[in-house]
Length: 272
Image (cartoon, rainbow, N blue to C red; front, side):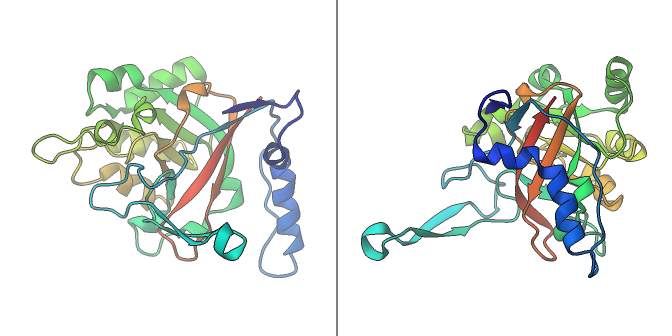
């Protein structure tokens, strides 16, 4: 979904265009307490792209996890309005993994700072490699080759791997891609790639699959590397084909669940 800021924008887009200023205002309003003013890098935007999969009862979820379920509690003909209850796991749909997901004592989802949720967005196009090898893992050499073409990965950026898997999201069997032995096959980050991105001091990494580790992983080594470094991860991202390699800004509206290890998020890319 794209919108041009040269046209009359919908209400939600106007809110997004002011989000950097709004973040400072909100923080300033609480400055008398424990919250300090938090600055974000300035940016301009002419388009907004929603990188979030809509949630519904038939959506794909991690095997053995908690599926999304919407239950109607009140309806128009009985109460004059609608009210629903949602049931889902922390990791259902487009969501963010907090460092505490794997590492006891590291930051929980509500402790992710604003300046790490409004960040430069860079994208590695892995679609061809993933199509050739469903178990493909991003390597340090891949990242270095990307940097030769696009410049160094910016500090405090969200580094996203576009595997093309987002196009399978509404086809659960193809998205999970489980073989007869119960092993999933989808691409991800290698631990060595995660280590290099930690060295580049990214804010976090993202992907359009169920996990930032490849599907057949049993050790979740990339998870361990990133989360131990107090970085976050975004999984099940959408619409990545609409993004440039560099130049966009990510706005990650994650649910600030107190002491949560993961939480759903609506994520926007703002393009200059």
